[in-house]
Length: 115
Image 1 (cartoon, rainbow, N blue to C red):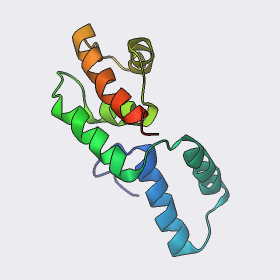
Image 2: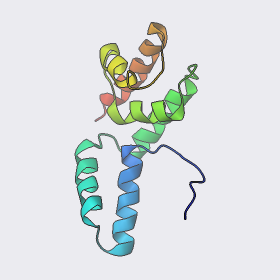
Image 3: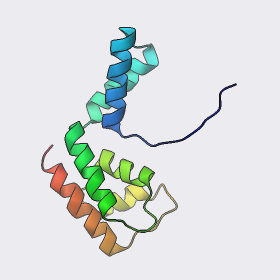
């Protein structure tokens, strides 16, 4: 029986990279992985470099109670206004002040313009 040692959230761009590595190693993907690859290719909006920069800037905001899983989800979805961000974060037991939401949106809009 296997044991989970650590849980680390990964974004869509990172998942795309991992799927490509598996595809290269195994020369093909199974059905489920192929469907995941289609989904990821459709949703990946930024390059790896831009995603890394976005994640770094979001972490540098050092917002209270904002965990890595929230930061990764924000980078994946790129909400462009406070209403979208509020909907995105409503799935978590997390409250973010209006001022902090504005900071997050300022950062995501900077990268959304690049896509």
